Image 1 (cartoon, rainbow, N blue to C red):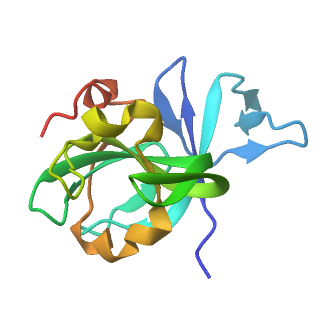
Image 2: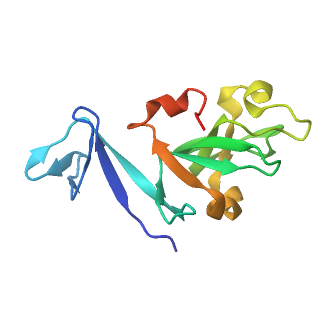
Image 3: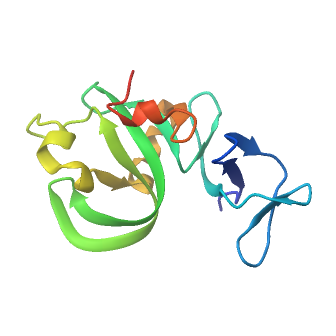
Amino acid sequence: MREIKFRAWDKVDKYWIKGFDIDNEGNIWHNHCGHPDAVVVQYTGLKDKAGVEIYEGDIVKVIYYNGINCILEIRFGLHSVGFDSDCVCGALANGFHFRWISGGRDFLGTPYMEHLGKEWCEHYLGEHVAWEDEFEVIGNVWENPELLEGGKL
């Protein structure tokens, strides 16, 4: 069973809120102050190769099967699933998944981002847990939004 943990990012003041509470309406509180513009993210239960915990919103680098550096955004929520990247079966799943930002190719050598288009470049994270010891957290979507634009290596 994975450990259930959360962290919260204050989108206005741009910092991680330490030791926060969530009330019944979903509001974030810290030291008796509300944080209406905070976003709460969940721990995946995975750690990267340096032991850094991986949360939704993190951006990770991994070397894919074909030796190409890939940049992935970790997400949580509803996503399409299929048997492989070329067979999106129209089924939906809810959970941790990732979106290709850069790198990665299908079996024909076509880059995923070209071949499928951004909306189909998502994969269930559980299928790739074997990569866990190859993941390297290089940032997150709030502190490093520039990594979402083509994934600097």
